[in-house]
Image (cartoon, rainbow, N blue to C red; front, top):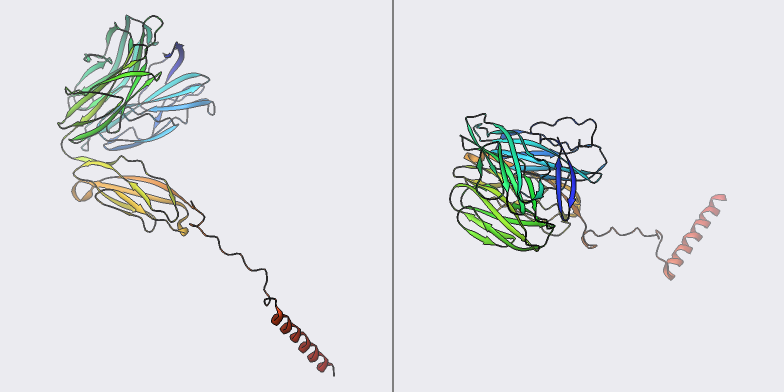
Length: 428
């Protein structure tokens, strides 16, 4: 586990890392305050779906917020727990950050995603920096340290420093000469071609009283077969950018905070961005994308629609990646729901009788006879969105007798007289 203290320098937050990041299974935290990152499945073949949780962070009930950096370029999750699918083989470091009493604490867990035939990526045991407070005036020197092991063959270790080319070696020192915000990561590349990546380290280098912005890059598609279409998004804190410049890692460039890119050729690409703040200082970040030929196991990548209205058409455009072509089916669904096996379009019109919670299991499959598949389980809450959708039953009449009126009154009087005559005859 790692404990951090937050120190605000103008608009930049510097983090004091009080212990080296931990990878692997969770280490018990008996006293706290501390963050505890845990995962239900630490190793398995791609696509690997895992459930991450920070529920055992301490003190329970005293944590103001959680954030999960999933380690593959997908946007962070601001929740105590997260379910995520790692679609490509490799080693990923998921980083949990919690805030307790105004201070931040972190913990990491390493996830090994193997190939379908069991080839494993290098295992990152530790990654740390000295000084642990990664902020200061330019020029600013940092010593980077990491340990990794390759269970299947050898490996080559690099530090990506957030600017320029990576430097070879697990233990390296580097001096940042220009003010800016840089995101450094340790990468171990096995002889098998599988790669493992550490948690990010943000190095904030100031210039006088000016503090650099922190830039973050995310992608919606970190891996897939060619042609790979990815949407890249950049953000900045403090949020006052004046310019964004992208380098896609293959000689192409672009501008703007959000860009679309297509990679036609197989390979590993680092897409990087430089964001310029209104104070003139820059922030740097990058994201790794895999483009791999061959078969890709099916993986559902869309977010389901979880609300529906009685009488209205429900639609969910399910999406999945995979090579060969993915086919969609519903293995559990309410009556009347259908899915287009090719497009993944789910359609359904719920009835009044289906009001409430409905459970759905969507399967995306490919490979020989659909033997490789991924499933998405979700619930749909069906409600009456209009008064006419769920009409109320008519209220019972309060009058069970004959409708009042002249004829009704006369008939009732006749019955009373007849009854009296019959009673009198019996008395005789």
